[in-house]
Length: 178
Length: 257
Picture 1 (cartoon, one colour):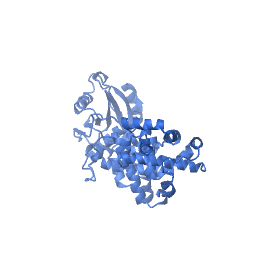
Picture 2: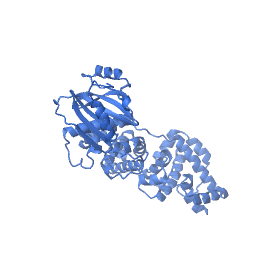
Picture 3: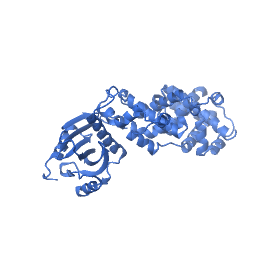
Picture 4: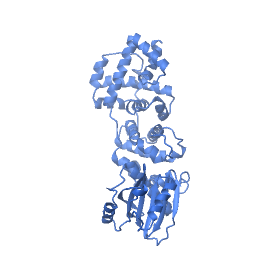
């Protein structure tokens, strides 16, 4: 999205990021149909809030709305499929720095495969999953992740650190422990 | 730098987000500390495993179409209530009316006038064409190709002219649906800009007033002449669009027709 001189419309700002919006929604909801609902609702909101958009990064702005939409829909819907189980073990275990157990090479080798990696990421709590997806798949900068996830830049770094450690634990589980 | 500090910054280092001074300190520490170096090497590999294996999801075509056209209801809402949520419809019908024409007041007036709705539809059709890249059904700069193609598919034969000599080459035509009927859209180019000309038979008996609108980056002008209604939309400047409109309004026997 270039910062051109021409006035920017909602369509110009929001539509080029539809894939990014859907990708984030799909990772957050872990479901095709729910992801579509989130994206539609998010675009409606984005359209409504567009008057408040003051230029800058349209992608981060839009992703922030997608994210907020997901969380508010999750709150509104008590439907089980949007319910995020809180995984105590994942939260508390494996987050200490430097726990080197097993053979990292073997773990990664066995993890290679879309299914295992996807499931491992999907098992992360949403607030860690989102920063990981925004960083590794959307390849956003910390600054843009901070905007999209509405947290300070320092928090982005610490969440990513935890997300990666949890992911490792998750991969270890998927591989039956090492 | 000790291990605790290095571990804190390791992910910023991995992501190239540290300032030069800190990055250098971390790099130095990694060289001298084997456990930290191994942790970093592991994270690097983990990253490539994630990047090589985690799927990126692409918005399905029907979702893109729904959002572009703005005509779909949210699946959830339609299932629950059986009708399209009014707000989503409003977004659809007035993708442009709200966003581009009457920004800021749309949410206070619920029923735009017919003329405003039509202008909104016209802009939406133009924007949709540009964004999706589906500008033309028949791509040709030859009016003798474009005109018969359109005539064969419509119940009228729109006037088609090429203005290459004046800097506005014809790039083609397509069919669209506006004002409750199939209509012709002629596409012209001016430098990097696309101009959409919507043409259909005038049933108002010449009651259409010539008018110009300029809001949110799009300029429009409309008129009725010789039994046809014309709506012209582009992101050209008003002045350039005027020049183009004057060409279109020139008598049919003028050079270039």
